[in-house]
Every structure is written in structure tokens, then in C-alpha cells.
Image 1 (tube, rainbow, N blue to C red):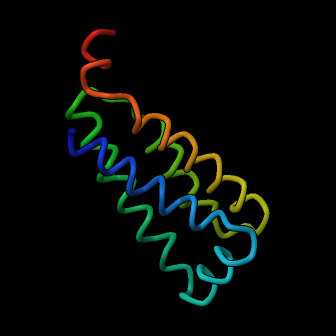
Image 2 (image 1 turned 135 degrees about the vertical axis):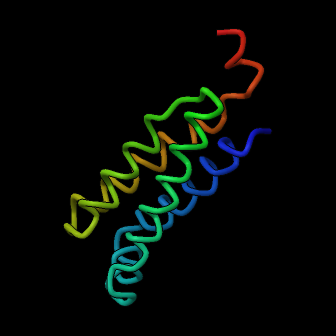
Length: 101
């Protein structure tokens, strides 16, 4: 399993946790929006790793956008959920399948 796949799973799970309707928002606000900055850094790292491995980068790019607009209450929640889904789906694509296509 490549490092980019592991990072997609990690960031996907974190995005899913931040997407919980009330708990995710409370966590972000109570930590003064620091989780959004941390996620931005993790998505940038995942983007570079995905580019290096030749893997899909859509989830990481979407995650960067989500981290930038995640402070908007309802929009942020929806973006976190969508980003989590995209990251987990692209994280399930195995390295062997990627080489075949």
C-alpha cells in the first residue's frame, strides 16, 4: 500500500469526523479553526504524495478547497462530508488497479 493511499484514508477519516453536523462544528470552533489549518497542511502533503505516485488528486484538491471554506457553517459541513467520500473512494483504488488503467 502506497503512502498516498494511507494519507487518503487518514485525511478521509478526519474529514468524515469534521463533517458530523454538530460535533464537527463544535470541535472546529472550540479549537479556534486550527483543525481546518491542520487539514489544509495534510491535504497539501497528500496532494504531493499522490502526484509523486501518479494517483488521483481530486480528493486532495477538494480537501484544500474545503479547508479554505470550512468555516462557513452549513457549507463547511457538506464539503467535509463530500471530501471524505471522495478521499475514501480514491483511497480504495489499489496500486495494482491504478497500473492496469
